Length: 130
Image (tube, rainbow, N blue to C red; front, side, top):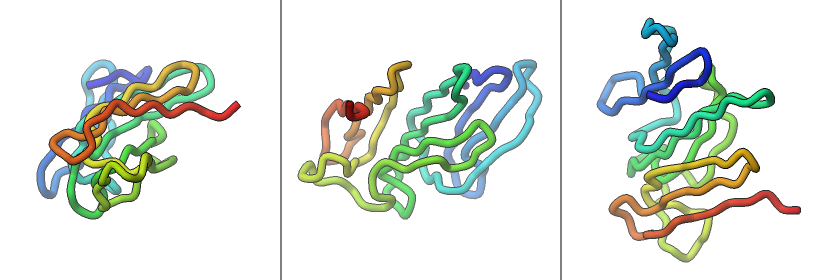
């Protein structure tokens, strides 16, 4: 569970279950969202004066897998990195193959561990152009 003041976010796997659950800091269930996630693996929450969002890696091999997704704290999909449902081969730098973990710096740089059992085995860094 990761805190996004004043919320805590948790993900779960399984068929026919909501993938992301949001709780109050006191532990009360608030809401869930389920769309565009297949098999969540890594989660990173950002809470700053200018942004609150949740980044989730998806190691699934179906229609939503092989991606890194950014959501608002209410569950609205903001952006998708990678091509959903398409495993990377190591030839295309932005095509992931079961991305496992994510970390986002305050500077906006993003670090992604790609290759949780897939073909890619790398630490990937994304930076905004100057």
